[in-house]
Length: 366
Ligand code: NAD
Image 1: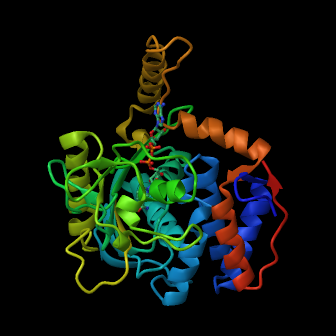
Image 2: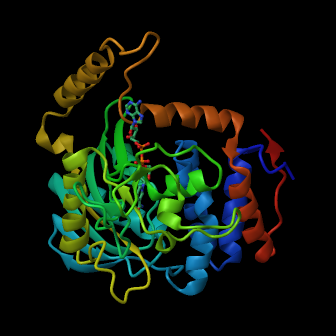
């Protein structure tokens, strides 16, 4: 076992099959365990460790507590042809969100556009994965996401929690694809989790204390915690700040209204009796082929991406990147060299596996 400070390095394939073993041992069938592990690993490969395998112990606990249910498919609430409302029934997000996306793709290929409202999904993880699923089918997509029952983020001008970390994602099927995907909070909650595990520190103004002081200390969100213990956002008195002042705060507002209120899944709060959280996602799918201008659209978009990237960098040796580019680069690197994990993250996954009797693979010190 590597020491407490040195990151652990583990091959992507080995890590993916280890995580799948954990979910199989926790009661998921082969296909679902594979989907969850593939999605979590995909987030690590993209560099979003906050939404990667660090989530395993929490997902396992949620499943054991009945907050999320294995083997559930989303059910149709309303089918209007070009739009569908789906209820995820608190199934695993990695099952019901790809299902909702596949339906959006199918309907957009029929009608040219489609709107899919998904409510009551278990944690769907990295929202960009669904934009990538649509990109693989040649579609543009826009995804507004919220987390019903999870208030973490202070609105612009406030210090009290009112929004979830509500991510927003846009996918454009250029070559290479453009994938915009971010939380509307200054940092995703998972990044606070990673920082609390000794990973990348938070920006010093990412959080806000009840008295209005800005903070980069995870304790503002979690309160005091044991180094290897569970973190709970219910433990802290502060909040994560919305990104981009009134503009990011406004986008978070829109995510709550569209992905929360319009889908019927509920907004971030007031929390009430729920006791569990669920993602809502309102997605729009557009087929450029149906617009009759696909070739021209792609030509114009790709030329534009190249022109944007050609802007003179602010720093010598710097570079302007398109959304999705940092993830694509890191994916290639981590597939080649392995996935680095914070020692505390690795230790908590190992503990979780051992609790389920799952053999632990070797991991090297990075
Ligand atoms: P982030 O702040 O790292 O921003 C990522 C986005 O910015 C990507 O589109 C990336 O390509 C782009 N980007 C990054 N560096 C860039 C650069 N130098 N130039 C140009 N573009 C650049 O992301 P985040 O806010 O920390 O979110 C992390 C993940 O958390 C996302 O995948 C999000 O979907 C996920 N999330 C999920 C939930 C949920 O409830 N399921 C909630 C919050 C966040």
